[in-house]
Length: 267
Image (cartoon, rainbow, N blue to C red; front, side, top):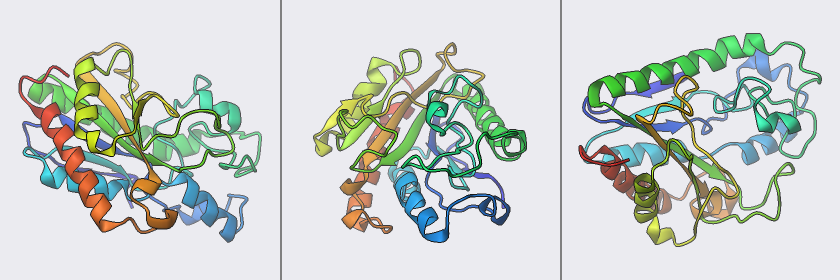
C-alpha cells in the first residue's frame, strides 16, 4: 500500500486539496509497537481522525468547475503526522505529538518514551509524502505560475487533553499564515463557507500546510486551512458522516476551489 494517493486534477488548475488526517489505517508492524489495547486505540482514532474529510474533498473536486488535484494520506496520523515539522521546531512535540506521536489525545503513552530513533518512520512515511507534495506544488507552479493549497481538516467539539479549553471552537476554524494566506484567499474562504455562520480565524488551530522547501518565503504558494467542527456533519459524533451535510460542505468547498482557480485570482 502506498503512503499516499495523488488524484490528478485539470492540467490548468493551480489548486491542491490536501487531506492528511482522514485515514484510520495503521500497518500491522506499527500497530504492534503501540501501547494501547484495541478499545483504547479505537477511542484514540475516533478523536484523532478527521473522519469524512476525504469525502468532502472528493465532492468539492467533483463540483468544481475546474477539477483540483487531491493529495490524501493513506495512513493514520498515528503512524506519522505529515503536517508536523520533523524536528525540534515543532511546537506540538512538547506534548508528545510531533511528527511521530508518543502521546495520545488524553496524554497517555502511545509509544515508549523517549522515542530513541524516529528516522525509520520518517524515512518510510514522512519524507516520501513531503517530497511528493513538494513535487506537485513545483508542477503546479510550472503550469500556472502559482499553487494554492487548501488544507482540509476537522476537529472534535470538545477540546482534547493537550488543548487550551479557553479557546473558541467555532463551526469553522480558518487557518491562515502571514506569508502564504492573502486577504483575498481568506475572504474567499469566508464567502464560500458563509452559510455555516460561525467562522473564526486561527482558533483553536492556526496556520496551514506548505511544503517545507517553500514555507515562509515563496509567495507563489498560497494556502489556507479549513477546520470543520465535526458535529457539523457527523451525526452523534459517529463514524459515518451525514450524507446531506457532507454534500453541502462539498458545494461550499467547490466555491472556494473555483475562486482560487480563477486565472486572475489574487490569492
